Length: 547
Image 1 (tube, rainbow, N blue to C red):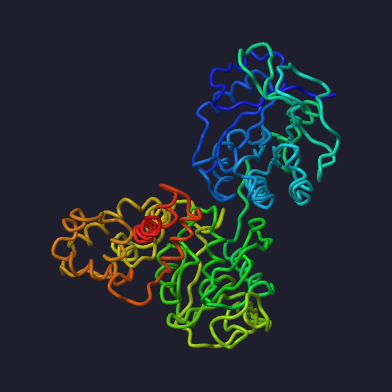
Image 2: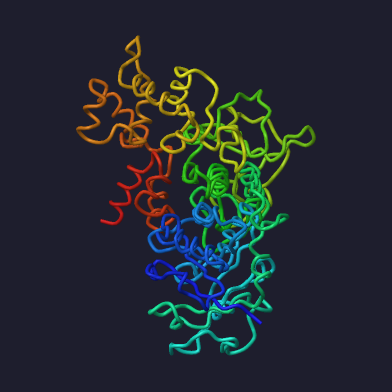
């Protein structure tokens, strides 16, 4: 016994669901990657429900030109899917460019959708893919929608579609079988994908239901994820796994990956060595993936640039050593060293850090040969300058103001000074952090930075940071905006970015450029967003490398 259905996308924009009398269900493409939205989705989904048919919604993973992290793509889908929570089964379409990423990426997407909607999604892929990877971790939690075609001849609905055998790898049975892409059924003149659901209408409706609630009867609340705990979980792995030792020349790992189980799902980290700053920065970069602050923290940084980057993200504040550091906070010696607070609960205070290679120098063989190149151990009072304290704004359902609807305390003048000091980051991060106060505070910032203060003085470093963030444009536009301050500010910009002959910049520009070329930062606006204030200098280096 089963139900007959179709799956459609924008290719079937002319399809009227009301004409599909022989269909029991319709699965509609909602989104792809991090930027594509099917313009027909809402119309087709609403028509499906209005005609009494069962509804499914799917996301196309890694849609070409819109590629993003598993978490970012899941959030993009959730935004479109939200009106249909409790009314539809969500699915991940896993094919084409997504295949090379393996099951762990798929599971992170599935886990995130389940945690943020309360509905268990399924995964769509071809039968051949089931035997190319180890899907056991996915099959335990998520149902399978599988595709296998005997040929490309036209056919109608079938109650027993052809298969080369009832073996579906890690799954004992599929939930849905897609058996042709050249289907013909009454009500539509073109070819259609035809599908068989192995169950009843009640079975389908049960899979739409929010966990612990009747379908459509309970508002879904987002599950809080502590980004600090995720960062600490990643750091603990880096410090305890023998695959990771200390090296400055090899500070970004080697080939192959380890998988870390975190509160945000399974996260891949490159095998191989780190140094003190790349480990801490990478842990936080990965912990923030998929949040509104994705890309503001990068692993390509040095101890001397960490304070500027972390505080500038709007997620961290600089605290004196008298402050009681929390899990995920960062101890920083700006000239020499950094470590992460793993525990500070009144019992054993613990640090996670990368310190020295097995040779006693800055480089050695990949991996931890001594057990102390990277390790978690008792706190010690080193030459710390202060503590980078996380404020919780990136947590889902977390700190007040993280949603962008509220506003931090303080009058407009005070908040403007804090913006100029870099506390609230730039662009969307600043807008989110300031919430309803953004427009008023930004106007005051603009007034101050354009010479509107009564003293006529200005903060050279603050102006330089704003230039780097792109707030004053380039070339003649920048000169006009800065006026008489242009030469001084531009010199400071050049110093910060290492263009004035400095031997060390606050970021490893070459490493970031190589990461861009690999595709780690996406393209177009996505790259600009993720690189933030580093975009101009990194993109310039990318262009040089590719010329």
